[in-house]
Length: 91
Image (tube, rainbow, N blue to C red):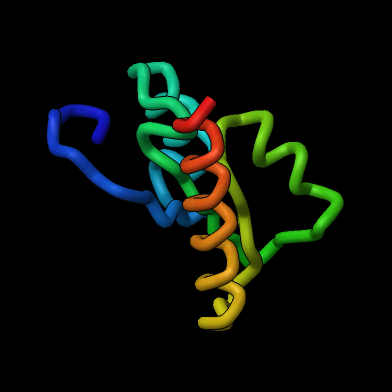
């Protein structure tokens, strides 16, 4: 995403990665011009608290959920992101 021009529907971003963490990767993706609507990002982190939601949104993630990932939580997050993007597209 940072170097190519491929089209992606959604990014599942691990927040704690070696070399460049997911927070920095998200910031760089947004700096390249990918908006929340053109490339939604759902963060995944073992250190998630609901009080952190605004922090993750402020760095450019659409949503963030905790690990271990429960399929129902992942599906719900993806559905929320898709609905949010559809709303923004219609405005």
